[in-house]
Each structure stands twice: as structure tokens, then as C-alpha cells.
Length: 316
Image 1 (tube, rainbow, N blue to C red):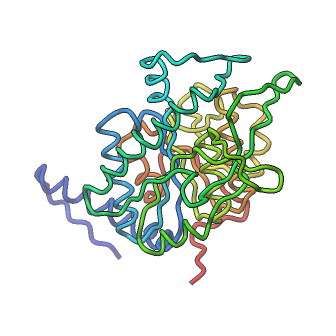
Image 2 (cartoon, rainbow, N blue to C red):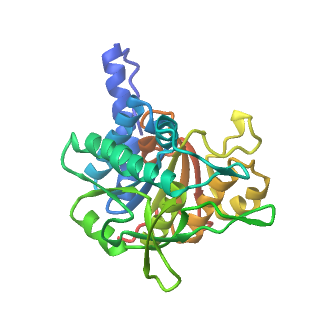
């Protein structure tokens, strides 16, 4: 029996009570994810708004502090576009898609490794020396091959754009075992059909790279920060936001999704099919969206899961 006392609270007491309720709600989720690997794709507004940047860094540090093994994979679309314009780098488009020429690749490399990754590492490390910035080129972290892009039945050469074909899981796990937080820029060395390096570097989509890393590590969860609230049953009706969906239902739904959401839905499904226990699209415009997704019952986005997924499962 629970006894509830009707005692009026002042603002300070009410705020403290709400915080305690949040912590209590988080407890089972902390236990669930403790010691588990969570891959986070960092993108959208969270990358360009200083307040959201700091909130994201706070979330990652909190996750590490309670025993979760976070990995961050970041894009940098807005920053790359700004640098391309500022440097007057020639840009070619084919079928509406930007071609990654050698000149564009140099800008991509410079922005992702030298700007976005370094800024995030510095924010995380303002608490403690936890984060280590790296790219797919470092110590054979990632390997990629040129993408085969088909548009209207025609193969389009998109230049130096690739898909991940190998992940150095031993390197990543050794970092996690030491308590480090890998912050990964997805520019990756190209390999040929027999996995020999070609000497070329490829631009890899951050969503795809995060999915490949989560699959290779059999991560407990993949979280993608975006500029949308999640997947809607009837876009754009906000009341139809789907908070949780099984892989069977998502597979059936993907053909009906809009062009912008279909690749994200497919990325969730690919993660689940590849052995990741659950995968979520989260609205990166919300402060501390990452913590809200992982440590609350409903989360703040759309979580896809295996049909047989049970949140209370534990290997202990």
C-alpha cells in the first residue's frame, strides 16, 4: 500500500521532486544498458546549435558515467556546405545528387576530421579525457568500396562516395574496454575486391557508417539524431508519431514512407537485420534527446526492434 500525502510544495521542492522521479524512471534502463554498446549517429540541428552541441556532449558523458559504452559517428553536412561555398570549390550535381570530386573530398575530410570531430571531442573532454577523435583512416578502423548508385535504372558515378565493407571491431572494443569514447568521422580508405588498399579515400554517409559499426559490434542500440521527430503513421499529423515498431511492421511500412524518411526507416531495419537489438530515430532539436530516448519508458522518437525483443532481457 502506498500512502500519498497531500502536502503543498514550493517551486524548489516541486522541481526536486520531478528530478527524483526522472532518476527513478531511469534506474531500470541504466541497468538494462550498463556494460552494453550504444552507437549514436550525431547529426542535424544538434551539430550546429551551441546549446544542443553541449547538451549532446553532456548526454554522452552521462552515458559513459553510468557504465554504458557509447560510440559517436558524426556527419557534417551543414558545415561541409558552408565550407564549399566559402572556398568556392566547384560542385557538380548529377540527378540532384552532389558528386564528391577530389576537391570536394578534401573539404569533406578537413571539415569532418579537423572541425566537427575536434569540436565534439573538446566538449566531451571538458569533463574528463574520455573522447578520442578518429576517422575511418586511422589504424585501419574502417574500409570502404565505391558505391553503386542507381537512379531510374541508370548507374550514376557519384565520385568518391563509398559503402563500408569492413569494421575493425578489435580496435573499437579495445578503446571501449579502456573507458574511451570513440568519436568517428566516416571518411574511409578504399579497398579493392580482395581488400587491398587503393590509396584513395571515400566519403561515407554517416547514417550508413553508424549502421555498419553497430552491426559489426552487435550493439545493444543504434540511435540516430535527425531533424525530424520520428516516423509518422500519417505524415504530417503529429498525433500519428510512432514511438515503437517491430521489424515486421517497419518492413511493410517502408514502401509507403516519403522519400526523405524512407532511407532512415531502411537504416533502422538494416541495423535490426544485422543483429542490433533496437534502433531509433530521435529528434535532435530537443535538448538531451539522447538521454530521453535511452532512459525513459516512451523515449522521444521512433524505436524499431526485433519482433522477439523484450526490454527486460538480460544476459546476467
